[in-house]
Image (cartoon, rainbow, N blue to C red; front, side):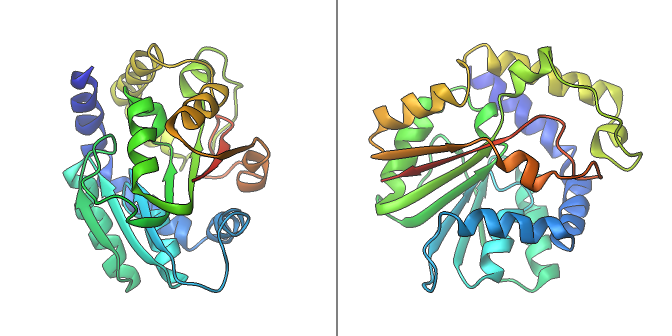
Length: 241
């Protein structure tokens, strides 16, 4: 299963530059405020939090939370993504630390963070149960994990058709890369059970005391079909230590 990580890294190394440009546009769009409203549903207000953005990509979540005054760190397995995340933070004038690191094997001491956030990552992890155990270790008591993801492998087999705008990432990615993404999705999905139900079970087994699922986030974030639209319905999982 380690080979799949190499495939994921190779794929996203070719997407990093375009991904940063899109995330910068998303940062300057209404989507940024929508994501902040989602964070505010779960995060304590009026205090500076130590936040880890796992699978940060080009640093979108890390930058959003750093701009709110939090102490943000982002990790990713793809070197090109880390390079572009550092560039994005510099463009935005934000102080964010980025490190090249495997989400399943985070190299931080126990209880290092108040908040863990992740977006569209866990569907790529072949050892998701191990990841959840490691993430539990990283959280301080009372801390929260916010996982925004979707059951992409299930959706690939039965996804609703949407008329996407010409500037949408799915229209700009070459067919061979889209085919590789689909192949990765199905290969990793073969190791997964139905989500988010399976995630709840794994998180409880990892030690999390309270796990909440919100299926309504999809319509709040993706209220219209634009270049940022996700054709697959996402969910939020909030898990408290």
